[in-house]
Length: 136
Image 1 (cartoon, one colour):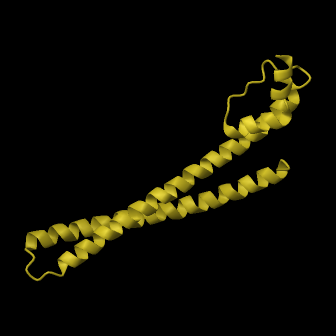
Image 2 (cartoon, rainbow, N blue to C red):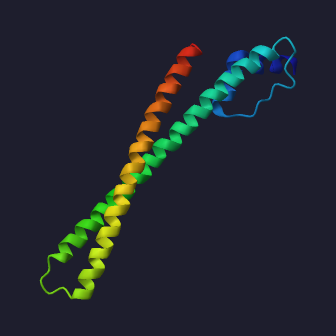
Image 3 (cartoon, rainbow, N blue to C red):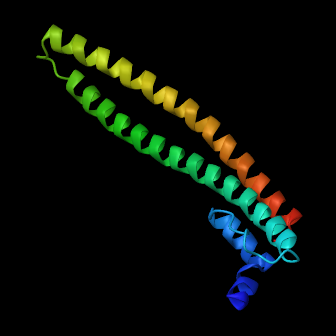
């Protein structure tokens, strides 16, 4: 048990545990090892938090890009249908309403993506700086 705790309570293991998002588990660490383990654990935990938020922003960007593509496809279908000469007025009005709604939604997603891209870039810079600060 003592050998296992000695191996587990190494500072590098603390950093890796924090970076993975593992629970802080230093209660059984020998008193002389605990401060270094915890210091590195919290550094790893900071990195984990930044990386997790960066992953959320990138996922948001991907999700929005996919939605924009789907909306573009539907907009193209509507444009094609609107070119028909024998299109009933009611159907034309319905298509135009859907077209306008899709364009508005696409524009909103574009604005959201601009924000998410800026946030992802900020997080990446923050991550790089934090890793350098920690000598990683």
